[in-house]
Length: 447
Image (tube, rainbow, N blue to C red; front, side, top):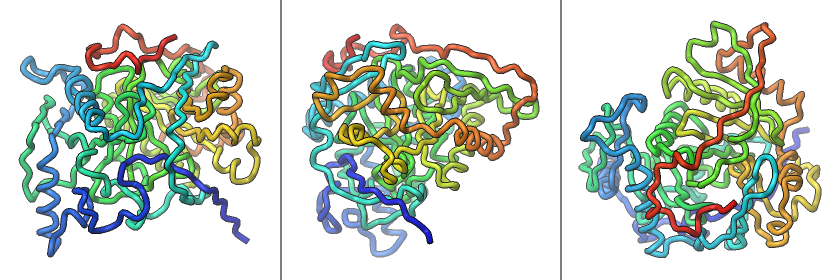
């Protein structure tokens, strides 16, 4: 007899139009069929194109490794002059549910420096839904909230491949019937940190929360264009605390290194046949959650292809997982996890459940959002470690999953006993290419 593991999920509200009962005919200028009607598919596509043309366009360069021309955009344009300026404009319009810069944040004393934030307002105004935690892949359900229902004022700009060696920006982008379905960057109205946005690939195609090659390489391009060690992207699969079954990545700016970025790693020696892509693979060491680290690659696509194949194996085999894209797209952390399954089986202690912390990618990486002042004031490296250790697969199960991932990605471990231990490089605060005028003092973490 099949046993279905189901837990009630209380997702954070990501859009101001996420509440129940706001269906078709809304008149709120959203991206859905109700506000972009068409008598036939061609007319409807024209309506979509016209809607997209109202959005600014950021066209990224096809090859991030090629240096920009002297007359191209400055390297900090994406983060400084576009994303954060647009984000602050939405702050001024009152589109966010609370002021995240007013949330107390501290670095917890200890070797890894976990970051704790007190965000008592983020768990309010939620709507109950249910996800099966033993099924990572679910078909898209247009009846549930999805990102075509966000208001167009929540969308900051389109993010598309310009096809050339230079990035460019158009405040009013022309649109034609031949344009493809747009990738958009939108605000998260319940932000965790300053500049918290959503990257939504091909938003109008209504893709479920499922990684594919095209979407993942798009996320790496966004990290590369941001060109800041403190701008990271994250992905949560269903079963690993994604709350919206519509393909999206999250991203935000944090002015200190994530603890996982400082954790030591152990290199996995690869056979020569597996070295063609230039991708280096390591295992995390002395960190509460077991994970793999993918780095380098001859090209951005080489790195994206290896990690995408790993994610595809995980989602096709019902293994929930989280992904952190770090170091301007040059380092990727992959975490298979089992917290929701343990929660459904009653294997998580009540005191951990009482914290209401759902350990998704940001928490696993070491930025822990706490809902109760008591937990914030008593936060320690021991308590953070205890929570995150419940997320991790057992060592035996992790090794089984790792072996399957290697087979799926075409990687082969070398027979040579050459595994080396190395400290992962930390991002340097002096390397952040951000003008201070763009960063309100209240959002900077003080150590």
